[in-house]
Amino acid sequence: MPAWRPSMRPVWPMAESAAEPVLFGFLRHGEVAGPANVYRGRDDASLTPRGWQQMHAALAALPRWGAVVSSPARRCHDFARDVAAVHLLDCTVDESWRELDFGTWEGLRPDEAAARDAGAHAAFVRDPRRHAPPGGETLDALDARVGAALARLGESARQPTLVVTHAGAMRAVLAQVLGLADSHRTRIALTPGSHFVVSWLADAPPLLLSVQCAD
Image (cartoon, rainbow, N blue to C red; front, side, top):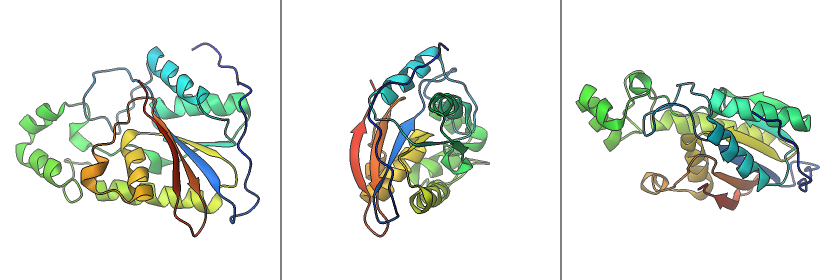
C-alpha cells in the first residue's frame, strides 16, 4: 500500500487521572479478500486495497489517537501497526478483541453451515448465548472476553485509545455501553470501516459520543 501521511487533525487531550474521562474509539476492519457473507472469525484473511481505503477514510474522520490496541487478526493488525508506526505510538495486540470463533463453520455461508450441521446451526441461531458452533464459542464467551478487555482499558488507559477490531466485538461493546438486549444488538449495522467513540470515566456510566457506519 502507498505510504500514509498523518494529518494535522487535533489530538484529544490525555486524562491526568482516573477521575477524568478518557476516549476510546472502535474501528471495524475494512473489506477483506475472499468470499463475502461467510462466517469469518479466526480466519486470517487480509485486507483488500478497498479495505485499506475504507479504514484510512474512517481514520481521517476522527481526531488522532494516543495509543492503539488491535485484534491479532491480519485484517485489523496490519492497519493498526501501520497507523501506530506513522504516529510513533504503541500498538498493543490483545486476543480479547478477536471476532467470535465460528469453529468448523469458518469460511462457510450460513446456508452451508446449516446443511452441514442442521441441528447445531438451528440451536446457534435460536440461542447463541448457550449454543456455540462446533469447535467455536458462544455469545456469552465473546461478551465475557470483550467486557474484560474493555474493563482493562478503562482501568489503565490515560490517553485516547483506538481499538481496531471486528463487528462482533464492537456490538458487544455497544451492548454493554447502552444496555442493549440481544434482539437489538443484531440490528446494528457495522459495515467494513464503521466506527464509534465512547467516553469512559471510572465509576460512571460510559457515554456513546458518535457512531459512523461506513458506506
